[in-house]
Length: 117
Image (cartoon, rainbow, N blue to C red; front, side, top):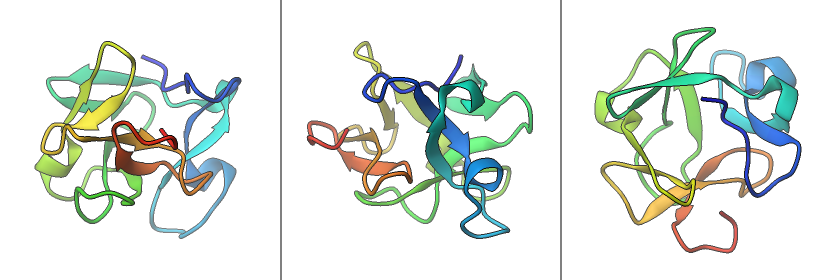
């Protein structure tokens, strides 16, 4: 499962430490070139990076505006996702939110029907 963007042509979710180091110890999910998009496997409600085995999860809490990171640490409920038929990815704990690129280029949570999704 390639984490490519359906709303941004030729873009996908990449690890910030590869394309845009923001904080050396934190691997934020950011929008980058499609060729660098994370490949993930769905394990139950988890999305695990096949290269580094990190889970995609909310950084601090499950709330609007919160960025996502790749990590093996943290609370498991912040790493559970549902992939909807329309391709939107939402936290299991907050189905009214989905992944988006606002503020660009950091991938964060926004209202599911936001224009920023």
